[in-house]
Image (cartoon, rainbow, N blue to C red; front, side, top):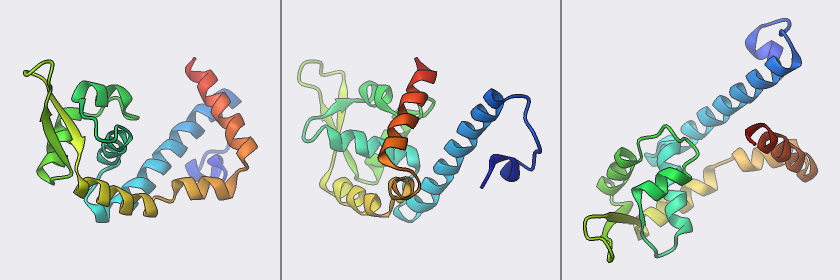
Length: 149
């Protein structure tokens, strides 16, 4: 659906304004879709992001600061997210060998299992693949990266 229809707005000040609103609107739309899909698993999109980061580490534990630096939503409270995931037994604390004051975390088998189930339900990737070609996705990535450069 066109942005004008979604926002019930006839015109924009410029194509730049429309582009910014379109990026924000689409990001929020994807976030809402992710929230809806992850809700039955008891996960928020931010918690899902943490689990995916930890899965990428394999058996290696990492610090909360490292998790924070890799998160999509930089405004998330990583410490709070990690604690909630720990309480659900999806991640575990590990004492850092070179700095005993630092506590690292890693994903548990239970966390891996839940993540695999949630991954099967996450349709954003499939939806995107059905709407645009790989060439268009590459161009979109280049444009979005250019904006952030």
